[in-house]
Image (cartoon, rainbow, N blue to C red; front, top):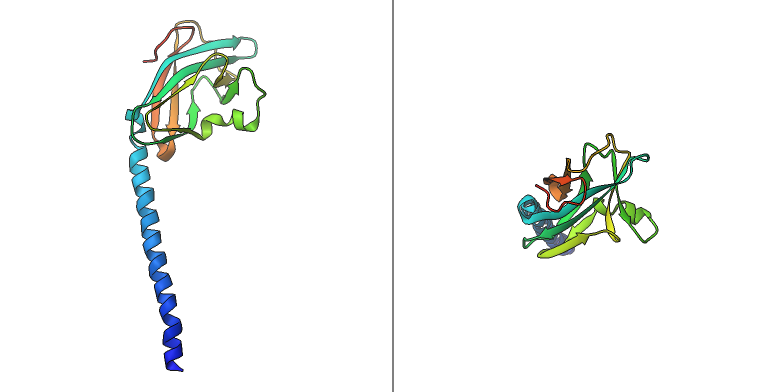
Length: 165
């Protein structure tokens, strides 16, 4: 009887050891991912940005830009914010807005060594319920938030000028 108890205990001990190794590997993967994600501010470059007022009366503006990942890590955009825009959503000029489109910039993957363009006629940001009326040439700060809370703030000019500072 004692041998049977020990024999039943061995698989249980092995399973616990395997689970412990897997849990450690998972924790290590999470730590590595967190460390890599912290490079987003350095690796992500936002250019060719402009904010164009679509409707002054409705307090709506469109934001177009190019986003380039120069790093070896895939980054995840988890949000975009601006003091002038209480609500920012994704939009496509020629397609119906869906919950996936509206929430696009809350879970957008930016693969390593990739350039994503958000142009006129395609996917871009919509700034809704603007708190003020921006004028041509004014620079509006926008903060892009990435996984692990890393933030990159760029100023985007109002009008059809090219590069943010």
